[in-house]
Length: 192
Image 1 (tube, rainbow, N blue to C red):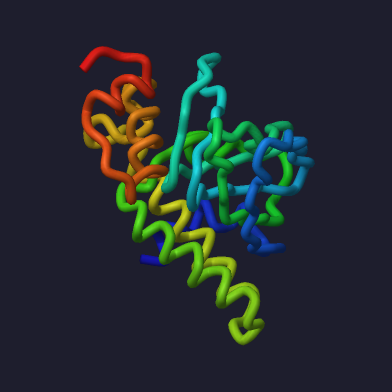
Image 2 (tube, rainbow, N blue to C red):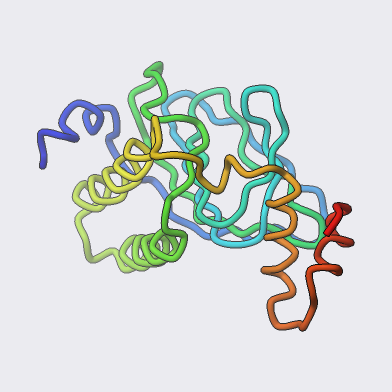
């Protein structure tokens, strides 16, 4: 298995930080631009965001991976009433290399993505794992998940029409409430 990551892993030298971020409600977030020598990976753990892909603003929810490199800006626009949360992975890399994966990819199993996030965070914060080994584990797993989705096996959550995405976001936010299709359609501005 090490030969699979031999070439891409040579681009990364260290995981510099693993942290969780929660966007505040109704407060604008200032994105920051990624500088040379860094890759910044954001994996949504909750809420949702608007993000431009190929010139089109789209909605994304939990399980979406944003792989930023030099010159890119971090995510920063929450869906209304659903501030996003994300795990942020900051890697020191060789400057000037091409992005190893697409900018935005959906991890197929969102629950598995959340488990990976919290385990990575726990291991990083514990300081018990040698940083080089931890870097290979985290970067390698993120790389694997993103590469395995590239070219895809059919449409994923990011390929859904915006109205369906918004309906799913509403349903998730109000999952403890009893509501019917009529309310869902009304909230989303579509017909039943």
